[in-house]
Amino acid sequence: MVQPFTNIMEANGGAEGGRRAAAPLPTAPPMDSPANDAQYVDFLVLGNKENYLVRAERKAILDSNTGLAQMLSSGGGDSKCVVRDVNRDNFETFVRYLETKFIKYSSPTHTLEMLELATRFQCRQLEIHCVKELDLNLHVNHVLEVYQALWFYHLIAPPKEPTKDTKRRSRCPRAKNQNTASGPLTPEEYFAALLNNCLQLIDMQAEEVFLLEAMLTLRFPELEMIVKRDALQLSSETLLLDVLARWSLEDCKRKHVDPTAENRRRALGALCYAPRYLTMSRREFDAARERVELLDPAESQLVGDILTGGMRRSAANLTPEQQTLVARFRTPRPEFPQLPVQLSARSHPRNYPKKMRKAAAEAERERDGPKKGCCNRLLLNCCSVFACIFD
Image 1 (cartoon, rainbow, N blue to C red):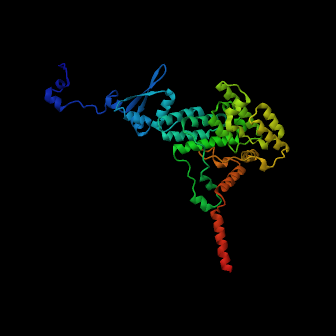
Image 2 (spheres, one colour):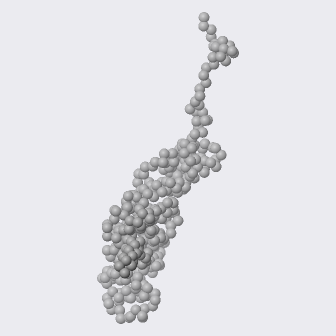
Image 3 (cartoon, one colour):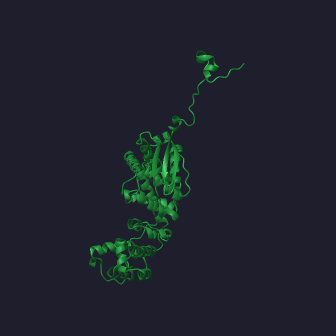
């Protein structure tokens, strides 16, 4: 007869039987055990109306060496962290990137949003990844958006002269092997290179960029860096005059002041002298002056006299300031802009015309001065040797 039992010890014949034939204990922890929860961390994303929970692998976050890792480490082992003022979807994409090292961008705007998160949480690897993606897809339609973002998120300084990585285009094989191009390494160098490439694209497509409404929303330092560019590719300086006239009018509206000629000149400051007035025809100059007087009456009279050939004063009768101004107004713009820094397949030198690459190489040689290359030195040495032999 089968006897009922109430525990495992009775089923195995008492205490000794229970010890002899005890049921095997499970080795894996249950799904809801604290040991399993310790592998994850929950980020509570606080929103305006709703809050969201984003779960991530604790080890991946700690190994990322980002701001999230510091937040988690300073929490004293707590499995929950609070994050404010972030987009939930972008934040989850950022967390998944830390786990998988993979990210999919949906648009340049989305890439800029991810760059903002990477900068905020000090993820240097993702910053570089975003910069390369932005350079790869850099286009006229959103170049000003990228340009302004670099000003907003990072400390911007005027770009320096191009680095010596252009030596890789040297015709000397030995120089090519010895002077290997060392591109940007740190995020800061990548940001500077992307800024350079934005300005380079603006140089090449200046006429299209100047027609964008976004030009009128630029702050003065942002506008100044663009319109002072020497290599702006313009069919006529009237295009630059037009964008300056439109921007000064919008600036007067923003400041709620009367858009008089004096107020518009005050808004532009030294940018009034950015156009190369003496490369224009007298008809173009007069037509532009009817729209806006960027120069004061004396300066306009000086430019007008030179354009018509009616100026009887010699250069000695001009003040040093006037001589400098006239020399700048006469200077033609270069035929080609500089090449961009190679950050992606888009900015590779082979994607640009041969004439443009040749002009960039000549400009580099002018910057380097009258130094002779290694090939020239080798040729001179060979000539000296042959001269000694035949003597």
